[in-house]
Image (cartoon, rainbow, N blue to C red):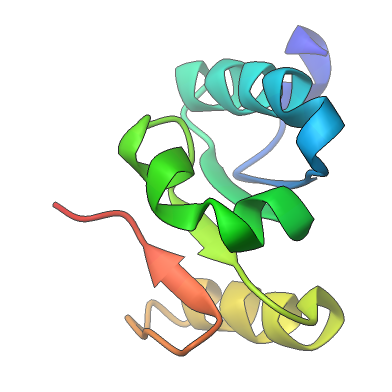
Length: 92
């Protein structure tokens, strides 16, 4: 995984509750490589504030990721800052 992360700018992780520790491990490794980290899925949707407070995940995508995530990535590429009801940035 370390080698794959070396070529990434952004890492998206989907997470169900039974896989949260593995998802956070991936997010931590990605952050160490300087990647922007985004998490979605059921666990991230319902535990968004808790996950963001850990500092390993930069953004949570809530709801239908197949619609929100492409718009999110486009806004990052365009260097637009935005918040919708489905995308929450970390504070700071």
